[in-house]
Every structure is written in structure tokens, then in C-alpha cells.
Length: 385
Image (cartoon, rainbow, N blue to C red; front, top):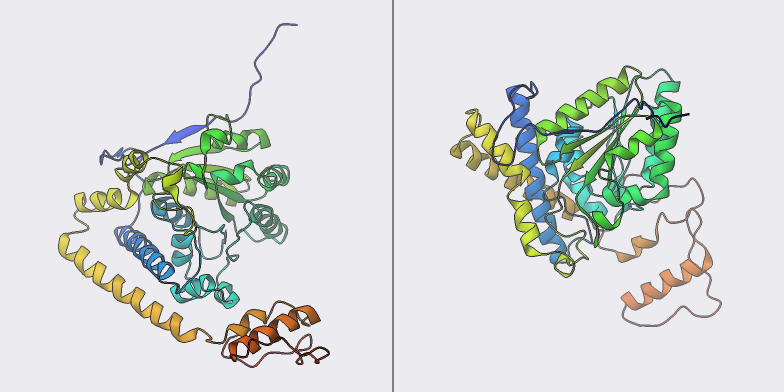
């Protein structure tokens, strides 16, 4: 028998609508209401300024380590704009812009990064999961949500985020396989920012694209210019509509770049060049979107100035609320870890309490541990459970 080429149902398209130089493909330009264009730009600017303020707060020791989003705002906002409040959003650990769009108060995000678990209490009425730190571990959860929604007759779709590094994890492949087999209405949104901490994308996989990995699991994959909010939205809208109509999952690879550090514990100067960063700065999604709106006469210098002032005050107010909600007692770190605190943890708590009182003494041998809340009891504090 002769060798024949198999006829596969999908191929990988690349989509770009608004180029780095401002070139616009008007035939592909999605129809977005002018008011929504303004909302999207404001959200992008807010996300960038909040990210910068968080970095300052971390350097001042007022919050802990976090993952900045500078350079990836278009990939997040273009995709999250395509879903509705009735849909689900499942983040990894770098989706601040999407979380703000979905209604997460800034002070909650700051509380989380200051070490308070209350910061990841999902706001009432928001169909999101909390931030997930272990790489790719949120993807099976997203597939489960999508499958459950379809099983219950809910037409909700699930949008889940991950980075290029996650495509090297087993959880990614397991989630993709189950999504394809089950026909789950889930959108896999990969923010390919070129680096998995210090490992470049070229050392992770020999695949020409990451989007093509979807083809192996029986559903479409699309690669888009991840710094082009119009392209990200157009691809996301198509995938969401397809999933909602029963077409199953899809994967979108947003080719973007992390302009800042991987996390605030990282020094990218040790593994990438300044020339590379400058090249991607010329593709900045915020600058590109601003120029687009200016050409449409939807944004001018005075509007930009007022917007900057409004956002600066909004962030300042959020920081003030965050600081007002902090519990000054470090002993709260031992709360909510166990329903019934084990003796060894109680001993550590008592030792810290003694040190804080300035004695430096350890608990006396045989000293009975302080009573802990029984299962089901509520601790009296300023925090909601």
C-alpha cells in the first residue's frame, strides 16, 4: 500500500489584527462598543499601575512575593472580555488584570500577597477560582468545572490561564486529554511569555507552536499576537461561542512577553539580555492600544491625564483599605491551618509568643497547649470566614 497523508480536522492559524506599528486590518477588526473600548483601556491602565504599585509595596516589605503582569495585559483582558459573569474563570498566579475585570477588589489581592488567606476569598457572585501557585494544577479543575456545567445543563464555559512552562507539565496534558474526550466547554488560554522562570521556550519543546498541542487531543488550537487585544478578543470570542454551542474545547496561544521579573524573588538579568527586553518593549500592548484609541478619537491627552489621576487615587484608596484590614498580630499565621492544631504546631506558636513578649523562652516542658477552636467553631476576629 502507498504511503498516504492523513486528513486531520484541524490546523493552526496565526491571528494578528493591530500590529506593533499601528497597522490595522480593518477586515478582521472586531466590533467593540466604544464605551467598552474605553472600559478595556481603563482596565489595562489600572492593571499596569496597580502592578507597579504592588512592586513598590513588595520592595518596601509591605507585601510578599508576587508575579508581576507587565506586558501581558492584552492577553488577559482580550480573553476575559469574551466571557460573561455567568461563565467561570480559573487563573494561575499571574492574572491580576483578569481578576480586576471580574470584580476582585484590589485590597483582597494585596491581602493575599501579604500572607492572609482571607485575600483569596472569592467575592460573592463571582464565578472564579482562587489563585493557583503549583504550575498547571488548576487545569484539571477547569476541565472538571466545564464538564460539570454541561452535565447540569448550565451553558457556562470555563476560561483557564497558564503559561508556556505549564505545557511541559503532566497536568496540562491530562487536562487537555480529558477535555477532548469529554467535549468539555473549556478554553485553554496560554500566555506564552517566552520564559518559564529562567528556562526559555525553545528549551521546553521543539513544537513550532504551543497551540498545535491541542490538535493531538482532538480540538482546535490558534496562535495569536498576545500583545494585540483585538486579536486576543476575536480568537477568544470565537472559541467561547463554539464551546457554548456544544463544539467543545479550544486552545489559544497568546505570544507575548514578560517585561518584568518572573516573581519579585527573581533577577531576569541573569538569564536574558537587555536587548531582548527592549525589542519587546516596542510591542508594549498598553502603548499599542492607546495609539489605536487616539486614532479613533476616543482618547486624548486630557482624558489620559484625568484617567491617570483617577486610577492613582483608586489604588491609593485600595492600599489604605488593605492596611486597615491587616491584623498586626503575627500569631494569626497559625490560625486556619488545621481545624484542631497539632501539639507540635502549638509548641511553635507558644515559642513565637514568648519571643514576641521579649523573653526568648521556649514553653515549659509539659506545659499544656492553649485551647484551639473545635471543628466547626468560629474564631472571633475582624476577618470573615
